[in-house]
Length: 221
Image (cartoon, rainbow, N blue to C red; front, side, top):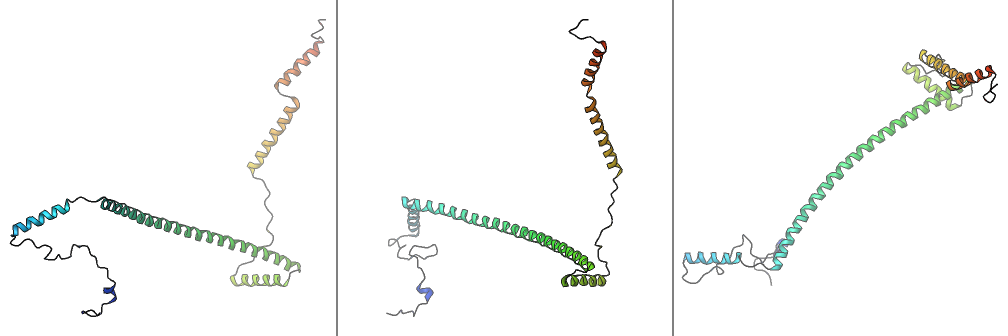
């Protein structure tokens, strides 16, 4: 049997139609129809009484449980949403910090690697120059020395010397004075150990006096 209004669309065919009264739904005139001959005041009084009766009607236990559960789940939903948003913000902050720290660490490692490479190249160049001067350089070392010479000529800079100048071995005046003080204290300590301390000197003097008198404590004569 085809519909008199024509074929329905997919949205009309799958639309959910609520059977409960909605705030914007229109009530039928038959439902609000009062007794025959009812005046306007009587109708207002009847509708007001019906409204008060519906509002003051006892609520069943199932409805109270449903309403309480709805409030609880609403609070839980808001708390979960706030927690997810906060966790997302914290995770974003930690991610940015981790990325910045990783970039800084990689930059430092790259600088250390470049410095190590420069040192290795410098040591290799010094070794190649020594071998080149001794006449025992390989082809690779000779090529390295020639490239370094060409680069120095192009930039106008001289190659660093292979042997540094003699180091200044003169001690500062303060260091020499400190060493003299230490030597004097060491000699004084050796003399004290050789001659003994004040108590040892007192004992030696007492013994010498007794030997000079020629008497002993167990011989009165």
